[in-house]
Length: 135
Image (cartoon, rainbow, N blue to C red):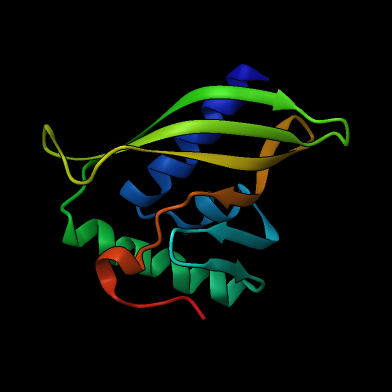
């Protein structure tokens, strides 16, 4: 499952640089929850996920990102069949960090050999850069 975790991290990172909503959405399970330093956010509908994705694209453009690099730290199987995947994220503009690296944990579900995420703990909310809150 380590290889699939790496593929998952690549997909969720590249989706924002390549501006591919379907790639991002394909790795999520609704309702999708994010826990940020400001508050928990629940995206229960396709429209909510699409709107949030758009705001992250706005933030990426504001920071002039050309690379989001997520490196696996750990992957733990849970007794209920889910997985906890912890990773470090770096966002780069050119060769420079656009923001400080941070560590997050995703609640992952194995769907036909592919990880899909239902929650992310310690997510960076786009509102840090855009000022727009998810509703």
